[in-house]
Length: 224
Image 1 (spheres, rainbow, N blue to C red):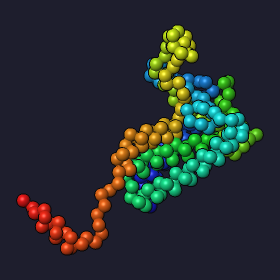
Image 2 (image 1 turned 180 degrees about the vertical axis):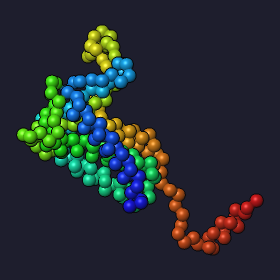
Image 3 (image 1 turned 45 degrees about the horizontal axis):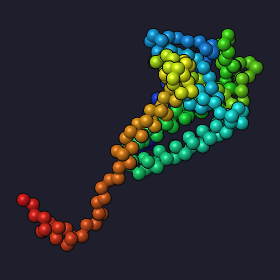
Image 4 (image 1 turned 30 degrees about the vertical axis):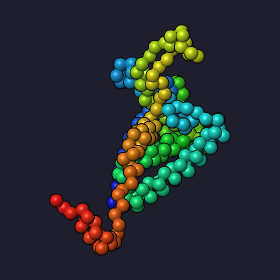
């Protein structure tokens, strides 16, 4: 188990933080409720989505089921790939990146798979309840993902001459996300930036060097 220490620490840490925060948000905030943490650019804003990162949705109920099944398969594939990386003694940075991606995928999968059965529905006026008497708001795999981080760092209006959006308001960064989304994004960004380092092939060293050839090389390249 020692060789799996990095993935276990990363995945466990991300999941604990992610789920504690989501539970608190779900049980203590109504939909749309906000807490201003740092002026107008860092806001805790409670919203839910059907399972895609950063609040995007996909294809109604059929799309939700497809997305949940796809995420389960992706989690299995990523977990298997991490095991192969560890067995091959790959760069620890590569293992770290895929562990972050795995942790994020599992975190959002927990919401999709179980939150519909564990909580009552959140609304703009009523808090959700834990293990409601009449059952949860959705069956297995049809729960909604809890999002809360909102960073409208830059707000303004597109100039009238701007194509398509001229005169419309703009916000950067508009999507609301959670710890799992952030974990996936950080893993992918680091992987893209440092892929040249992570995937660099080690220099090949012959296992059984030829002593005659080695002597010829040394004779032709004497040490000064």
